[in-house]
Image 1 (cartoon, rainbow, N blue to C red):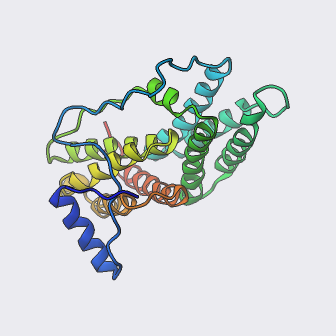
Image 2 (cartoon, rainbow, N blue to C red; image 1 turned 30 degrees about the vertical axis):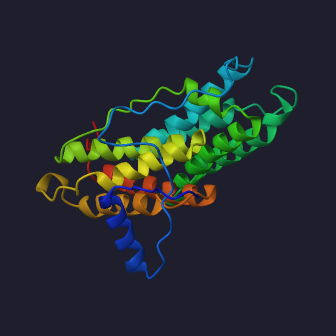
Length: 262
């Protein structure tokens, strides 16, 4: 990993304190060309002057990814039945027979189906969240192996307007922004987006301590702590594990606090 020559002092202070508390030597920060106080981020133009045309199976792939995203959204909302429905629909939509998709796609599709089936029958939040995080990583690893990351990034519509404010609503918007960038960091895959997401958690104000969020404060703080740890992780398996834990924490909070996210 590369180090950041001029990282924000707040970020360095938070992360140094975390590592000192754990008794570990500070790890170098991963690098992201993103200033949260600056203008919206736009990914660098591809070095290939000729954009890659979508393949004949691109629409299929997009529909499967919509299914993965639907499961993720239902998990974040704490809607268990909707998670199960999304998993059932995804596992039914993924082709099982040979010759229906390019041969190079087959290992990824088989892995997606296995995770969708596991998600469909999951009885614990942890198992369900892990399956969803693995599916995102499978998408990313497939994109990387096929060399289509620039094309996928060009097609990915991103709302990069950084949330501001310190109310409970503002903090939740900040968390949603950070979680979405982390998700994109696995799906593309993109360390830049992953770090933008984790950085957002670091700079978001503390979770408000008021009656409207009673019972959810510890989960809010745990989500931030997990994201701060994730800021230093560049191993895909580590990212999957931490994102899965974040999903569990979000789901636990939103289940206890209906309507917390709007």
